[in-house]
Image 1 (cartoon, rainbow, N blue to C red):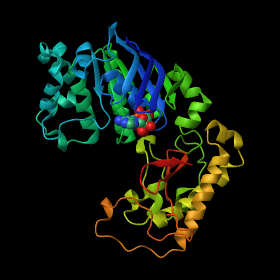
Image 2 (image 1 turned 45 degrees about the horizontal axis):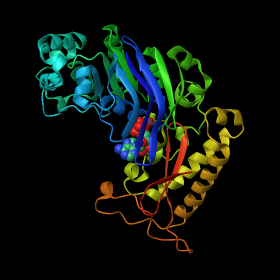
Image 3 (image 1 turned 30 degrees about the vertical axis):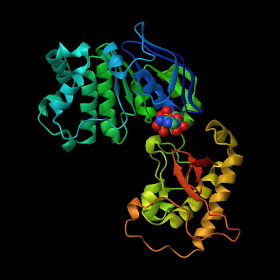
Image 4 (image 1 turned 60 degrees about the vertical axis):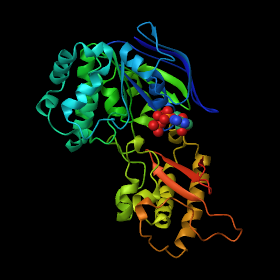
Length: 385
Ligand SMILES: Nc1ncnc2c1ncn2[C@@H]1O[C@H](COP(=O)(O)OP(=O)(O)OP(=O)(O)O)[C@@H](O)[C@H]1O
């Protein structure tokens, strides 16, 4: 069993995780849910020995203390990590990627047997053994990443957002594969933004908010929990088939539809420049229209806002900020396109208000609720509204 007891992680002065206690038994799937920046990846990294921060507390795997061990020793102890973004070697074949996963001493002696086990778990990998991984689809590459982690013959498999970038169909296949891993008696601990599909196959789950484990329960109970439904399962947002609580997409200008569809939470900050390349102003203007319409629909039901933990006064203040910026953006002439718009940093526009302060750059995204951040004019960070 993997046991994290009172684990705290500090990055400098910042406490990314505080007194977190999580455990995973053999043959069970445990999901960790939480908002962006809550500390989920930090928890996985701390357990795997790859955390850049200072880790304190007790982390054990079947009685062996992992805290302070080097990452390779932790793999030897039986804990494998599939990192966010998979970390496969795109220029190598499937088989080469898998073989590289067997570097742990616990796996080296039985490499052939472990490879056979991985191939029987994922027959597609056996068929594609000679394929260059970079030519595979996202779902197939994720399978390679999991297969490679399985090559270390782990007792606990940890995964950081494994469904990231996968279509709902491929995600479903991925979670089914993880259920097959569980059936081998291996414990699975995953951080996931796809709460609905991951809870559907999980045994238990934990909620992390602002560096603290705030709740844990069986997956079935979490799926029934109204607070979890509002925050993670998109109930009422349209994701789950219930009526959407925002303005319909058709009402959006077509160019901006991409920016405002409800995306997986892991989409993180959706920078206006990233999406549009050059038109921050139009983005802000669209955000103002869209968000105000959404807020107008939310306001009559303060109970819903409370459940989703959106303080309406802060939301209203943020939306007012957007409206002000949208108005300013609409009244300003369009900036000239630059030769390399894609790489252009997000900076405040050059014209400035009368008082001489740089106009704030506002990034708006839904994940799936509206969150608004103001980028510091000097680029040193973000201030949450
Ligand atoms: N190497 C680092 N140095 C400094 N701060 C960090 C570092 N890694 C993470 N943090 C900070 O620690 C906090 C928790 O980050 P973490 O990546 O664990 O969040 P998360 O819950 O996994 O979020 P996400 O879903 O966005 O990946 C964040 O505020 C993040 O900015």
